[in-house]
Amino acid sequence: MEQPKAHYNFLQATQEASSYPSTPVGGGALAASATKNGATYDCGNIGGLEPISVAALQVRFIGSAAPSYFRAFAAADVAGTLNVQQSPDGTNWFTTDTASIPASAGTGVRIEAAIVLRYVRAQVVNGSSPQTEFEFDTVAVSR
Image (cartoon, rainbow, N blue to C red):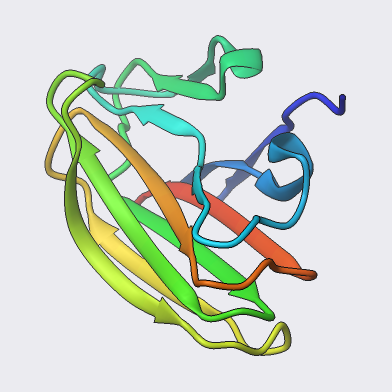
C-alpha cells in the first residue's frame, strides 16, 4: 500500500501544506455510495508547519502562522458531493461547505473555506455508481 504524501511550499510569505493525491492512499476510485475522508489538519496550534502522524493522515501546525483557509478539489466520472468538514475535537464533524462534483473526470469542483474550528478535512461522497476515475486533493493555506 502506498504511503500518504505531504508536501510543503514556502513561497514568499505564503505557507501551504497538503496531502496529495488522496486517491492512492484510499485505494483508488470509490464504490457506489462510498465516502472518502481526506487528511485531517490540526490547526489549533498557532504557527509554522510541522507534520505529524502522516501515516494516520494528519497534519498539525505549530508556531506563529496557522492556516486561515482550507481548499479542497475533487473530480470524478460519477457525480457526487465534496464537503469541507470542521471539528472542535477531531471526533464530532460539522459540514461547513459543500459543492456538487459533476459527472466528468475532466471537470472538477473546488471549495475554499475559512478555517473556524481546530480540525478541518474534506470528504467526498460518491453517487450511486462506482467510479472509474477520481482525483481528490486538499491544502491548508496561511495568508
